[in-house]
Image (cartoon, rainbow, N blue to C red; front, side, top):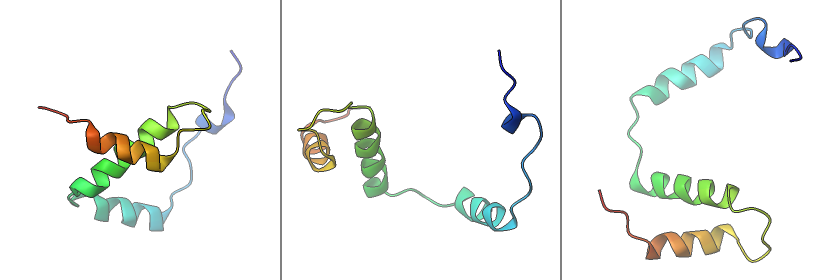
Length: 68
């Protein structure tokens, strides 16, 4: 298997990114953000169908009930 050079050594430190990651650690995720993540995931995995849009995914997600 070919060696993947981007994984051979650690990436350089990025102070701004590290600050953002630290700030995000304690942040609560809202229900709206979770729903948008589900829509985005479903849309990204839907394939290349022309009739599937993010709006159609949002509409479908409102009709499907998830039970815990």
